[in-house]
Length: 566
Image (cartoon, rainbow, N blue to C red; front, top):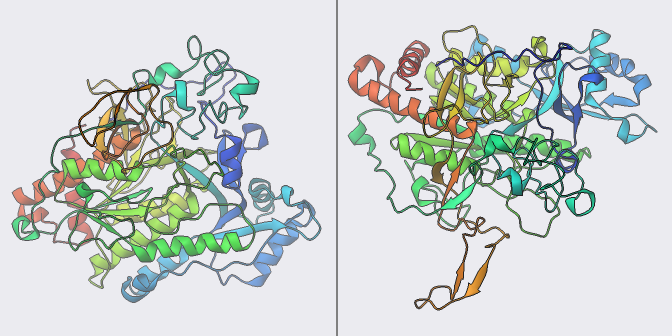
């Protein structure tokens, strides 16, 4: 279903659609990032890592290329450091596509290039955007781009109490995410500033977009997990849904055993790619060793990000991937979910990590289709995105575009969240325009009554819609630190707490939650596609999933999109 919102024409000065959020200074510091404002040379705000550029040039590029770039940067106090490509991994090297296809894959491989202070220069002068502008102006930066920060597209809490859903700052502890000032010293968010914008949430702010408790809340569920048929009962291959998100946590619905770190069962609902996770970690460790500020992702198991806080708060995006995995279990229990951890618990994703994961998935699919090994993936779920600094210039998204085009050309359905800022400004990768048979399946969020969710982005680039508000799904069995608002002693049955209390909005020990966002509309969309792939394969032998060639895979994907209910 194509988005049909009226175009955002901007203001009387011809300004483009605005960005109604920016991450807090604490989030920027944590990830070594900066905000690019329109006055700095971009046409619209975006967020990027200050000390990193992405390069598609070979790791063995001629020394004079690096030398020419550094000559251009000589007066800026910055220089590019020599770097090494992240290894493709034993699997890709052993069974990747042969000949020209493999050579093209190697040429496309993106690596992070370190930008460091020149000898004697102030480290604070290191700015990837300033360096990129200088290099492109001199004709030496065509192979370089920013390493954007992407954000998970879920509502992170009730804006009246928990701050911006894009950052994770509580206005009671960290102040407004738009100013970073503590409300204890700079003003109450209940009277002087909305955590989402700047005005009073009761009169002029944007909390109305999320009215009705759109944030994350614990629930209790008394249903058993949907039955999962055996491979013998299916008589076909299971569809694989790759979820690039916060990783996995123990949960019986998802076949992820306790304790965390345990081996996953054979033919279980959830699987991981340990080699891919090692590749992401290796790239991060190279930058950490060079002194860059960033957060590591050790493996596929979800962990809280290090904020320095001792208060025990849950991250704004804790459980994000587990929640999406549960949506797939509800709609397509016969599928397999491949969980790939690229998102931190504060919702931040490094573009460089995402590109490593997409590149690896494309390698695996192409190898499977060539009959040289690999692993087939049918659907990729990207419940994340960012706003581009220059939507009119395709060179700024070419890295992401190439990787997603490669998956689409292989017949993989790529599902992407439309974003949650009630704007028509393009949110990438959902807004990517692709020239092949398959489009990016950009998904906006419906309310339970099928009205468009007030928070959901909209525009001609939002091609599909699915429920994304007040959904219920699996969640890590964790206890946050906030506790119940009111409690009093009370008698109770043996073994139960001897108290009476209000609902503890931070107690997820039952393992389920209600949550909202286009993240989950995208997750539900991915689940629906997987279910349609199985349904269509059972009805039409030409659509069987054990036919792996690109033509058959694309035909199956197109038929599933044609039958999508949104």
